[in-house]
Amino acid sequence: MTQSDTKHEQWHWASVVIHWVSVLAVLSLFFLGLWMVDLNYYSEWYRTGPDLHKSIGISLFVLTLFRLVWLKLKGKPTALSTVSRRDHNIAKLAHTVLYFLLFSVMLVGYLISTADGRAIEVFTVFEVPALIYGIDKQEDIAGVVHYWLAIILISLVALHALAALKHHFINKDRTLIRMLGR
Ligand code: HEM
Image 1 (tube, rainbow, N blue to C red):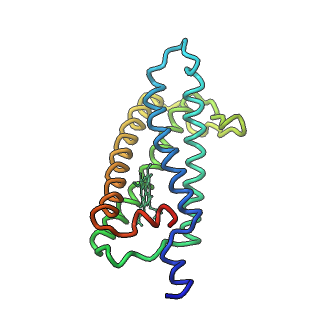
Image 2 (cartoon, helix red, strand yellow):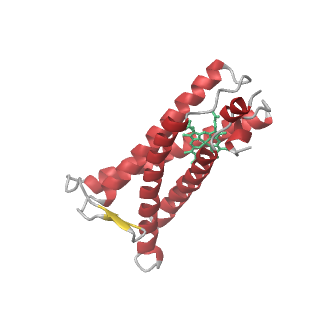
């Protein structure tokens, strides 16, 4: 096997870093989101929690856009010969749905925050302007949709993680190992 063949069987290190940073961001957003909605006005996190949630969300949005551009430029590693065509296609579909859900949750979240016409401040570094606001019940409807999309996303993430663990412990292939950059 030549050097370039070997290289093509691995994820690029940047893809690996982006994957795991995204995992951290999605999990933080999910648990922070659930926690912060129960905070009362007297909690010191009452404003900081949502500010942090929005800042991480917008950062993840930018990172995910970059991730797709990066994927286009660098491509994916070749499919493992130990993975059947059927499983490969299911994984491809699951990854596409994951991207779709990620963008949907973030865009609907944007609609909650901007419903009153206020811009979103990202880590006090820059602001994302409110482009769509003032729609009847915008905040309420976007809030419910955001919640359920996040629940569906996390459920699919759990299945995706279980599939990765199955590859590792039952099929004993390199699917998970190579997403760890090894
Ligand atoms: C928030 C959680 C997660 C999200 C949003 C996510 C998303 C994704 C996406 C979109 C891909 C496809 C990469 C691409 O083709 O561009 C991928 C690949 C992968 N993920 Fe995750 N992931 C998450 C959590 C996890 C966890 C917890 C594990 C391990 C336990 C994991 C293991 C893998 C592996 C092994 C691959 C490579 C699959 C392959 O080679 O076909 N992911 N992930």
